[in-house]
Length: 152
Image 1 (tube, rainbow, N blue to C red):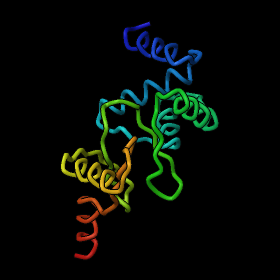
Image 2: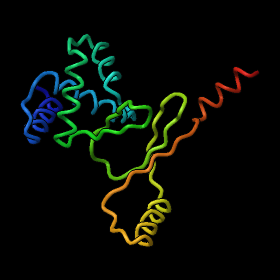
Image 3: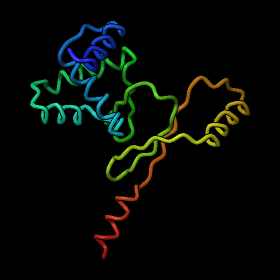
Image 4: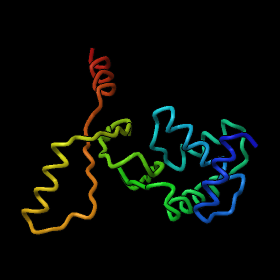
């Protein structure tokens, strides 16, 4: 077992999960995607990547492992568009999201002025803020460029 596999093994055990091949592979996939700058994956995207790796893990197993990881606090689940869940590794600090309504691209951002405004709204309305999530929707520059190319 190499150092990365040993770390993933320890991560699963620390979360109280039995170490299985599907869990190790899916956790590894999320860690690799995160390192490559792609933090948000749907169950279908996870399944397709596993197929590309010639893995025999079925889609039902992917859904089951993602649910277990969410319950164990390893992953966060988001619903950015019509019912399709997207998952990301927990950690990395608070951030907000902007989602392209055409291609589904998700980008993370942190804006101190937005954070301050949200806290101010909570105070003004008499709330003690315990958590929050902000998701902005729009059309990304790549999709807008594609639209211009089609019209030309």
